[in-house]
Image (cartoon, rainbow, N blue to C red; front, side, top):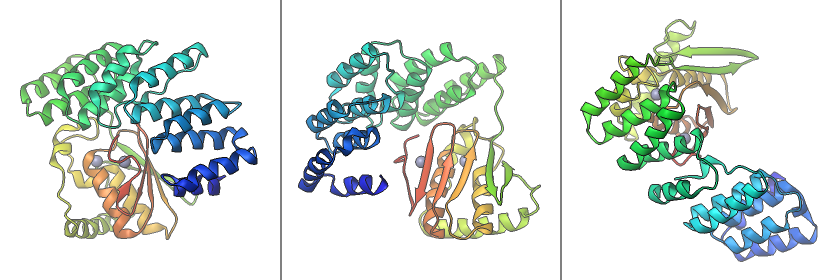
Length: 326
Ligand code: ZN
Ligand code: ZN
């Protein structure tokens, strides 16, 4: 299975790719829903939407992933009318479109129009995905609209207030940043402390921001210092933006260098050899930790997988699988 998908990736954009589909058809591999879904996604990614649609029609036991891959294919290629049409087909079959599909290409306006026309009422996940892309692409107008909907749908979720405050901060609107913070205080929205977990020899090690209680703390901070030096040689500049405004992540008084995921990563580097490092984080990874994890994966030659509240981040050779969108 993985060989098949690997081959498909390799063949993407090339003629052999189409020949491969022919071969798959012959041996009836795409009667397998996983292979079929891989085909739909790969065709969608390289813009071969007719082929993607054909693959969707040919998968006999298509599931929600098949349909979502098709919607994603159209959305990624800016064919929002077709994406909507597939959403309607999904609705008729009682399937739900996946919110992660939205806004990834930076086309926040199109994504918003897409949401407005969705046949189902946009839920928290849909608005949340849109708000995230507004933060990434600095779209204040739509960001405020998304935040408005979210604060009604989920008034207790601190993460949305933080995203909103980040959008204001990025635009230099400090008065509004303060207003959002006051609103959080008035509504008694509690910030969750950042915690990262990493497993070693069947034992879970937990790190808090600025943690000094772990028995290997001294060693961890020393190694982190060495790594930060190497990171700076590669052009790393600590991203103070996240330190000041990602109040969701950690208290702003906590220095960026000691966010819990950094400690967990260094701990795993010190105690394991070649295996991928797997971390879980209870909050969204901040911009600075994201850059740090990318650089550490390159410097240490290690694969680092961080599962945060939004998604999996696979850091390898200085690049993250999320494409810096999360
Ligand atoms: Zn961080
Ligand atoms: Zn990432």
